[in-house]
Amino acid sequence: MKARRLRLAVLGSTGSIGMSTLDVAARHPDRFEVAALTAHTQVDAMLAQCERFRPRVAVMASADHAQVLAQKLKEKRLQTQVDQGLRAIEQIASDEAVDVVMAAIVGAAGLAPCLAAARAGKRLLLANKEALVVGGALFMRAVREGGGALLPIDSEHSAIFQSLPEDPAQWAARIDKIILTASGGPFRTRDAATLREVTPHQACAHPNWSMGRKISVDSATMMNKALEVIEAHHLFGVPPDRLQVVIHPQSVIHSMVQYKDGSVLAQLGTPDMRVPIAYGLAWPQRIESGAARLDFGALQHLTFEPADTPAHRVRFPGLALAWHALRASEGTCAVLNAANEVAVQAFLEQRIRFDQIHAVNEATLAAVAPNNPASLGDLLELDARARAKALVKVKHLAPSV
Ligand code: NAD
Ligand code: MG
Image (cartoon, rainbow, N blue to C red; front, side, top):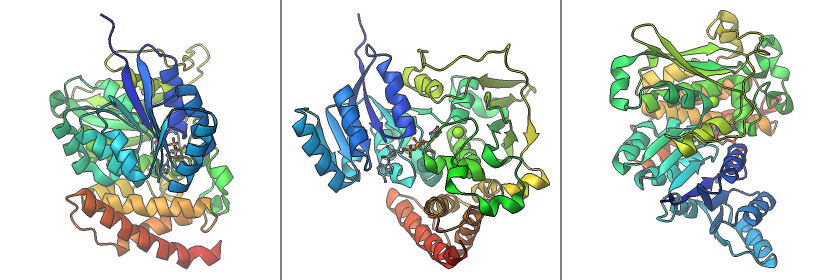
């Protein structure tokens, strides 16, 4: 008997991961039906996706943009229903008529829909790392209680997941260490004293990956790797002292698991997010992703360097904050994430300098005493409090740009 097609909802469908997800899904019309799409403000991109994929529902987080989309769909006589606001995105994430949810919203804004999908027991493909950094314990509990599957989409975490035994009950006894690889981003060899001159355009020009602007800046500061260390801690239940980062500029090895006997398993591939996306969509099967294959004849060398040399500690001061926050408390991770979102936005809008992103993060960590967040409400309150403090610091720094 032919299996029923899986009904896919893509949260953040107009972004980099959202578009790659639709690219993979479109290669397998026999397996996936695009049931729902959500975006923030990009009406034209959403309209084009509705024309191509004919989803049942499209949600715009912004009400004004939802109205414009509804009008344009009507003009084209398309049947897609338009909804608006974060609540509607949560509704999509837990909808009975959806089987698979791709969480590709950027930032803590994606936390509530992720929790809704987890609680509803969906197959949840998690790209939105900030949701896990902010909501770690609550999130993982929701996944367990919801009884669905959580598939990491971040390339490092997909690599780790692919290198681990299928049964999570085996992980703790077998893992010695998790080694996350990092490309080092565009400023790996740059003189730290010149980082103050970096423009948003330079920070977003990643050598190996093409991504949204926020994660591109995070990769340039290596805060992306800090967030990924926290993400790995929650996904795989590994304590902070067993999480290591190594710089690997070619981005061919996507991450590794070192076992108790000294064996290391790694996952390799070209740097193309369609590989982890295809893995998450089809797991435990494998499907065509569209990605180019590695050419071992042409691969001259794979190189590695420690991430914690004195020079890198000056160049990438944010990386160490992951271990600081993990050892401090769950709330500290949420504060760090909020500060970083505010700081990156301020840098992209040229209100602060590149090297001041870290100053905002440190000042916010020092200024906010985190409560012990036990609910989504507690987390959102803490997130808002940390954002307010981070903004004060941004305003204080602003005249120096
Ligand atoms: P992006 O900026 O390209 O896209 C973000 C999407 O989220 C867009 O569709 C946007 O409309 C939507 N969105 C933004 N703010 C929103 C809000 N407040 N409410 C509702 N929707 C909102 O980002 P991206 O590069 O696709 O990254 C998405 C997530 O995936 C991030 O958490 C990022 O860290 C993670 N990720 C991305 C990559 C990558 O290669 N791009 C790799 C690993 C992990
Ligand atoms: Mg990653």
